[in-house]
Length: 332
Image 1: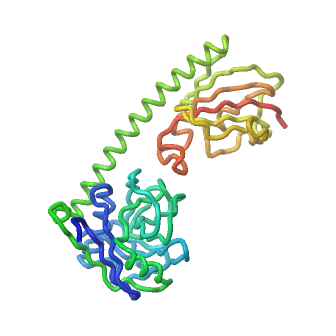
Image 2: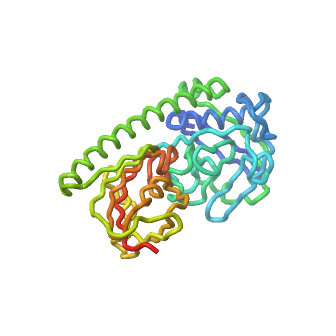
Image 3: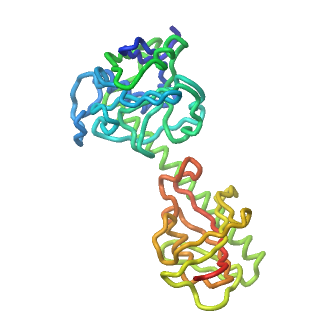
């Protein structure tokens, strides 16, 4: 066995050995190992704060969800998919770790930042999960994968042992204090990254405003108290849009780096948006207020009026500013 940190599942169908990515995803692995060895605080009843139990967490739990030709899922103390260790923690996505084939060990979640104790192991490549679930290990060989493929709903983890081979693996700590320190470090790095993202987007927005002002002499800029900015690139006619109306609009949605997310002009399928109604993009809802038929605006939507700190679908990074070129074709 090569140097590394391993999880050895004994199941009702046989042994599954998994090598854990403790160097690339240390917080996630510390959580998993700490639960497996009982060195990390948890509460199987889901109480908050979690209590120190000092007993292995996974022993005796079942694979409560099995989807043939997709994956097996376990780690729920209730056996229903609704349970957890009494706390949640952030995603720890490493871009080099993909759902690239069978035998990938990854965290199950209910959305960003909702990791706990549930995990899954793949039957095949599942690339649509990349960026949404934290990959933190891989089944070591074909014999172990055969056991994964043989698991059916209700099969149990009779025991889960952690094996440490080599100096680095033996030095890896997975108790409560280690997890808290790793979690704090991840949050600090994330905040530094987000601050850099916001600063970069702010500079890109300033450059875009200057570019549009030069290309559209006389374009007026409006700034609201919420932080929304927009330039009027083309004047409209008639009364401005009022709450309760439907605005038929062309939209080009993009990131400050130039990546286009949506463009209704390309499909020639205008969107119909209710004026004054709550929208997921709060900045879009605000930017429609008072728009006239024929008017074209370029909106610079700050992250807190867009997709916020979570981003969206692995496509829009957290804390992203959104650019929106919107033209009102009609008001009804």
